[in-house]
Length: 421
Image 1 (cartoon, rainbow, N blue to C red):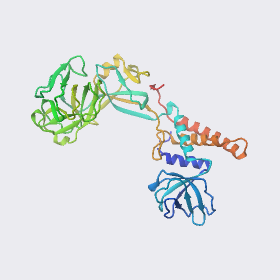
Image 2: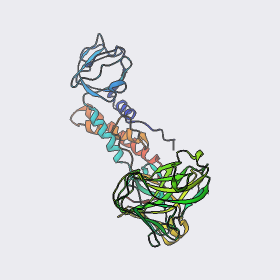
Image 3: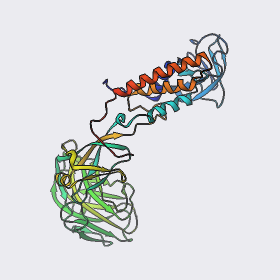
Image 4: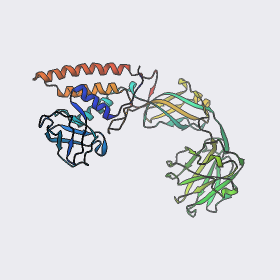
């Protein structure tokens, strides 16, 4: 199969127009006004383009669609109706469409063709972000993914343990925070660290900090860990401090924890801003950067990692399955034992992009979309009471066949577990 060359909706629309013999692409040869454009390369017949649609495809009016109400052939000047546009300029490009093929209809046919793509022809998608735990066997699948071909797990990477959270932090504890351990609700090791935050803790306070010895994080790129709260958090409500000073006294790195849902263990990964300055980290702390009121926060397994140092292994097909009703995947006992605590990579398929703007790129074989949409447009034109319309029906059948041939050339997955219904 040929290499997929992506095309925008604008390029696909033009190709459809040429299939139908319904479009003219031009470039303005002089400046116009807010209601007129000039192209002296157009034909010289007065009123030839009246009632046709013009689509501006560059310049300040890019994407605007108007009807032409008057055309003066001697000067190549056309007048548009409706809301005025910005003054047209020399060099602006445009399309003119036949009267019986409105542009909105072409866009509708394009998206109908996209929606008709069979599941086997759906675009590939790889997602890295789910992190396994021996405490879990059922994991969410993103709404973008419609089928999983393979699951890979990280077997090795460069990392430095900062704190496994198996012990209660003691270097610094704010008076409005109580620290305990939870040996039941954890994600790795023997326990998680529990911070009971009272309403008295103020925005900007350090809830707690812990000594980590002396860690050289130069060469690391991210900090990863597990977090749980009983309150939904927005990004940066909580921040992790890496400090070269005891009790997290200086913010050598201030890492904003992403948004998380309430009562859900979430694996976070945050990029280091200045790893070259992180040669002597001696303390980590949790900063209460926004006052969210009383809350319970749990932390577990905080490590520094190096991006692109990973090695991966594919999990055997028999060791996992999908739960369509819950839109989740499940690790069977053998799979959970094999992956342990690992970053997972899901290789699968996603829903194709609907092309709702001219700059949107098609992520499936564009030749299928072009021929299928051309067939739909010609079927809509067909009227067996007129010879010209009969020809449209014949052409529609020809493009249907071409679309089917293009679809068959699309390489589908060898085996896949679909998660959509």
